[in-house]
Image (cartoon, rainbow, N blue to C red; front, side, top):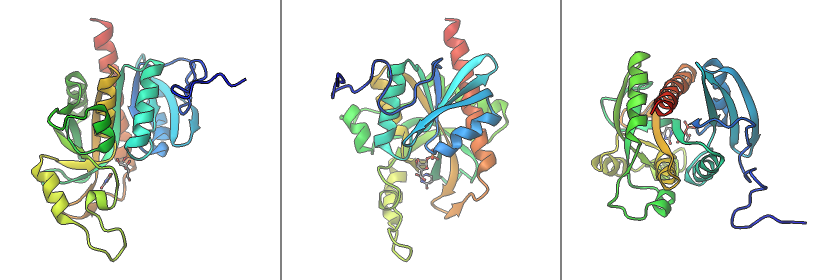
Length: 261
Ligand SMILES: O=P(O)(O)O[C@H]1O[C@H](CO)[C@@H](O)[C@H]1O
Ligand SMILES: O=c1cc[nH]c(=O)[nH]1
């Protein structure tokens, strides 16, 4: 018998998209790329991949005594919305995007980290959760502060700032859609004029959905590309491991902080 609800198609406490861990962490790191989940084995103790369905690869391990989950969101707002809703409904209370971005700000270099304080309003998926464009979509201040502290203690170059979440990678980020096509530098100028230090594809959605689900969320973004100098970080692996290290240290701090309050 099919007794699943179309409105909420969970089988009991099992979500329709994400694998469910037996022991559910309260804090999750959210890379876009499923391959980055496996890098967590070098950051978290006893790291185990729980499973993968579609773009959602999920694993768990320990940072000190803190149990931390890592779950890929896939590319873009639609799949990031699914991951955020399902993790929140499974009991996650802290979500930290650990992703890559294309920098716009001149003071950001390849391999630097941007700690997102706010997303410039742009994503259509985020607008479903916060329709008023005049209302800011921001990171939880305690998450941002824990991320900045983690960068400081790891001696990694980082600064707070604003990202812009695009609902596409090529034209939506001012790129051409053929190898010999023209990009749209004017779009990048408009993004920068609106306050964006960098462009990526999930953060505004995660922050907006997390807020609707009463979950604390933030984001640390590594500068994988620089759209002004046209630079591209080819040797990206160490930076991706540092993304997870920053996120894990901040998540462990958050878990400890909220345990003791
Ligand atoms: O570095 P990750 O987290 O995969 O995310 C970035 O990379 C993808 C584009 O290549 C988009 O998902 C963008 O946000
Ligand atoms: O330029 C970039 C780099 C990473 N991720 C993006 O979405 N854009």
